Amino acid sequence: MVEFEIVKGDITRFPAEAIVNAANRYLEHGGGVAYAIAKAAAGDPREYIRISKEAMREQIGRGYIEHGEVVVTPAMRLEKHGIRYVIHTVGPYCGGIWDGDKKEKLRKAILGALRKAEELGVKTIAFPAVSAGIYGCPLEEVVKTFKEAVEEFRKEARGVERVYLVLYSEGDYERALRVV
Ligand code: AR6
Image: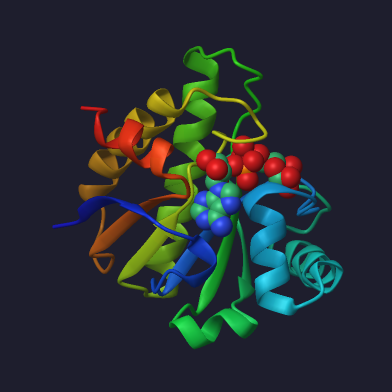
């Protein structure tokens, strides 16, 4: 049984075996949680961008990812928190607009990371609220999509036991808890 838990915290120090990055398709890590993860992992965020792009070439065979495709990089300095991998996924850009297409893209982005966690053999995985920051998707819809994606993943999960959705601010955390 896969447990889904909404927690408050900083994902760069969250003790899950894999953490997910809310990346852009080029893995540029220029702002938001992506920049925070890149800086915390490698010290110099540019170094983590270089590592991510190299990993993308090796794992995907091109210079960008589609929704549902993910890239794995080593946790580097994040290992001191028990983190082993960073899984980069790309959610939809909403700019305040939400529809079925955005939901499907986010669902793919979440499931792609969950399936990669299975492949990596990890038991715990933590996500930020993918697309709910710079990409401007409504937080409540993002949380709802997370719940549904984890529900779907339960049918196929073998090794993953716990999925965390980590909210950075108190306000977002309280809003997320109210989503049924
Ligand atoms: N821990 C957990 N959550 C965090 C942290 C943290 N340390 N820092 C921010 N958040 P965003 P997106 C939350 O903008 O909307 C980047 O430039 C934040 O409050 O990071 O998918 C990428 O390179 C928000 O709720 O991701 C892309 O270009 C959530 O993480 C673009 O932003 C996601 O916000 C992706 O935009």
